[in-house]
Image (tube, rainbow, N blue to C red; front, top):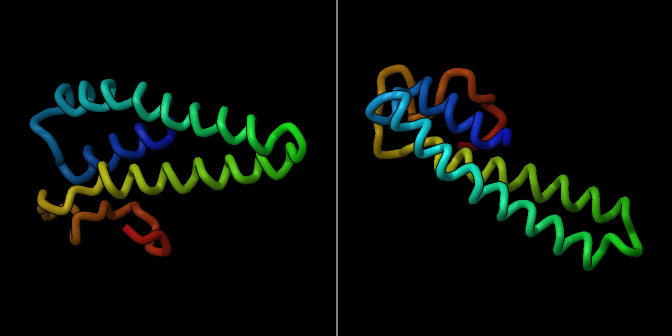
Length: 101
């Protein structure tokens, strides 16, 4: 669960949340929901495209997973209404500049 780990790192770097325990409980709640959503999309993709074109299904699934991960990190992880001096523009300093947040 790369998205959960990245969201946790963003929250820790920017000081989001009350404490680490509250943030971890939120991530533990979100983890299964995110996993189920991505797993269902892979099953649907394999059922529709994977029977005939496995490489195309794998490529589409990987692209979809990367896009979902980026969306979740920028939507849930980078909180616009939580200013912190350690994170100018609410983006952690380690976030790559070529990825929009």
